[in-house]
Image (cartoon, rainbow, N blue to C red):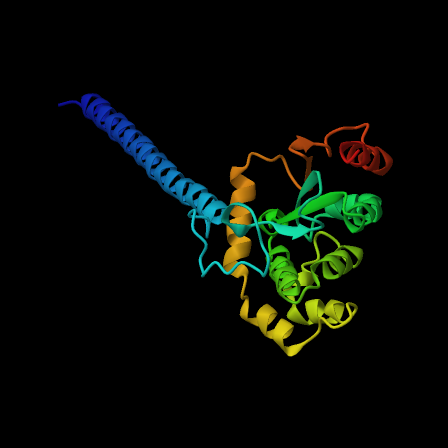
Length: 256
């Protein structure tokens, strides 16, 4: 065989080997991409599951602890804390979260007229407590404050402590109400509330299960957020024309 023919065959083999090497590299890249995509898919699924779990954790439709309603609680499942005369012709139903800035704004504007009407026997208020800010911002301040307010109800001090909690509400991102010490400090602003019984109720989370059940009722009630304020079943907080003066007028007219 001539040297020229041998060189030609060698070149052909080399080209074939190079082509096979190229194909092998491409195959390895393809397999790597498939494996990588599979890993990303698994991690992504795990992340989604984690988000779902975080969003639903502890919300299996049942409170995690015993449901101990505060003294005098009324309504379905004893989830309402009543204020005012039972015989009042108008009922104001209020859903609030002690970490909710909009709830504080509502209280600042409306609490004077609400207190006036309840003291006069013209209005009954049913307070319901929610903990949506804990879910949105993280923390336990909404739940801890709600339990403390229920403890205050046991002591017959719900209204003044409720007002103190909103008057001293921390920034929405500040979970100060998660600290029992903060709740005790504010209880000191209500005459006769900061007792050993109150402190034990707060520390032991006596009404934690009731608070969870109240929040579940809020979530299943189809409400858009807190505060939700209903006057005899009509949502007045969404009425842009509503004012404290108009609320007073509506209640007084109902009592004529």
